View 1 (cartoon, rainbow, N blue to C red):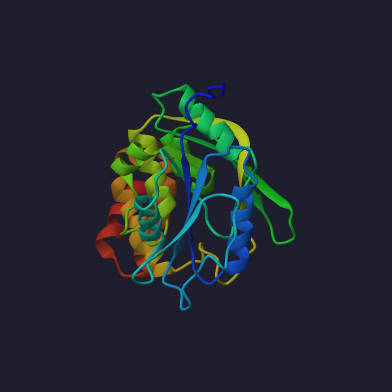
View 2 (cartoon, one colour):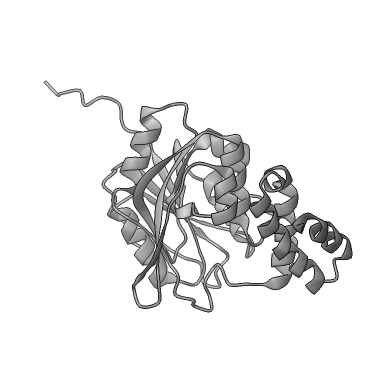
Length: 269
């Protein structure tokens, strides 16, 4: 008589946007393959690469799908695109130049299974420098004020229920600071839990193609969106207000945004 092993654990979908970085993508996928949690699918989002990505390019011991955008798109769009084509009850995101630690999916899924009131969970992120050295371990509570100041939650370290993600999604207008804007809304409007273990590796090796390379005009536009989106939270804490509006003042002056410069100058003091 076959033993009943009980219901399958929830499916976890890992969404990995990528473009022209096959060696890095393979490293990222290998870190998903190494997960101790078994019920995982991988959704690779080919961001309109010149040569479409195929299954011959990547291998995995997990179910893996490649979905392709119709045009080259910013990161929030590709993440939403991949999430919409995934099947998991729980969603995770992974940048193609970063990695997971082996216990990430196991510990985060267990936390969501154990407490149905939780919308999301996240672990710590180890930031690795050019020579493989640990620069810092990003860690902190599920607290929007502290997060807006220190930005210690990376997308790689997050797991979120599908129904919660559907309510928040990534903002396609945000072409930089998109993680801050997304995570700020998640923290403000949802219930989460911090697991104080390293679940993600963020490689800060300053390559020219790195996702976080600076564009000052986009920085001006999107920092202004952050200031407006989280005005209540920013204005409620003096050091946070000065942090956001000092930077906003500099960016506004760089691009002749007189109205915003006047607002931010008044809010610094």
